[in-house]
Image 1 (cartoon, helix red, strand yellow):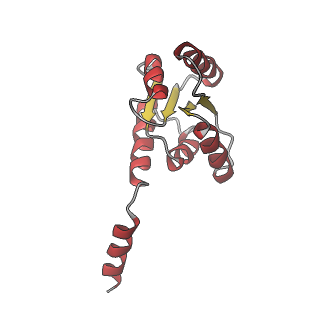
Image 2 (image 1 turned 60 degrees about the vertical axis):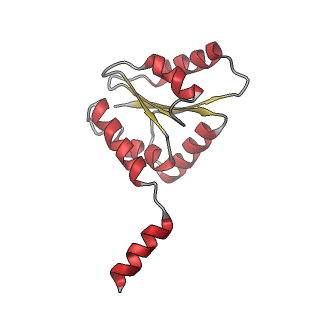
Length: 139
């Protein structure tokens, strides 16, 4: 089994986790780590470390962050460890829901991270282009 953290600016982490739990009702080993705007780097790092200890499993931990280059991502990178901790940036709701379905699949950490990353990317669409393609196909 793989554990996970969602580490974001403000309350985004908590809201993503709440929504994912409503959609996918399975028990998922995942924790939200909202970093407050007033947290120092040391405070943020400690929040992440403590949460990692809570969700750590033999299968490793995926840390989802909101955006590459942001404070949550930059601090999380210090925990990156081959086959133990992987980081995926740009978290969105489809990624968290997909994690819930893959958490107990028995796949290795890197494979699960790649599958989730692909799911998140494919979920980002420009609706007008999607609808235009459907209309052309129906004609």
